[in-house]
Image (cartoon, rainbow, N blue to C red; front, side):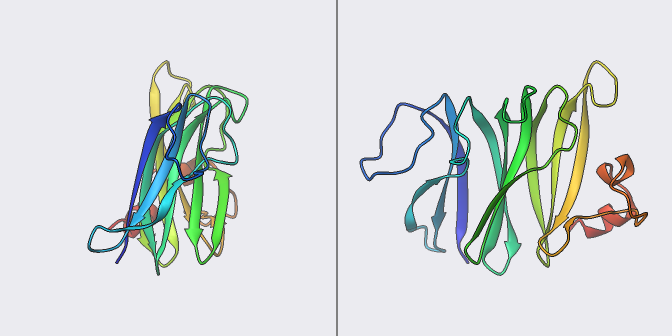
Length: 173
């Protein structure tokens, strides 16, 4: 199958091909390669919908059937330091959305893992979310069919849905 690479890059460079670029501090970019390592198409900007301030620390993984999801942190997009955003690429879909629901302080350094069957999990660090003076680790599962997944099946997206639990861990490969 194909391979997707993502990276952050400081602005001020040009590719000479009319490539859409984030011209503000750092941006996050991707490139698709075939199984032989040949480029498919051109580089693309993951965060082209919001290029104010910086977008950094991208992560990417497959979500099955040729699709992939990328996640990164973006400064001040949610109005309070950094927030975690993701974009799904599948069958022409290219939807950007905010991953974290807590927006106070910083949510940073996301890692995304495809779980198959169009589901994935994003894990990130969140500063002061648990009322300590350090970063805590949070996670959220998503499904292309259902959006956020209520992992404890109580009908409410609550803090237990953001922490590893049996339902979430059973999905991990």
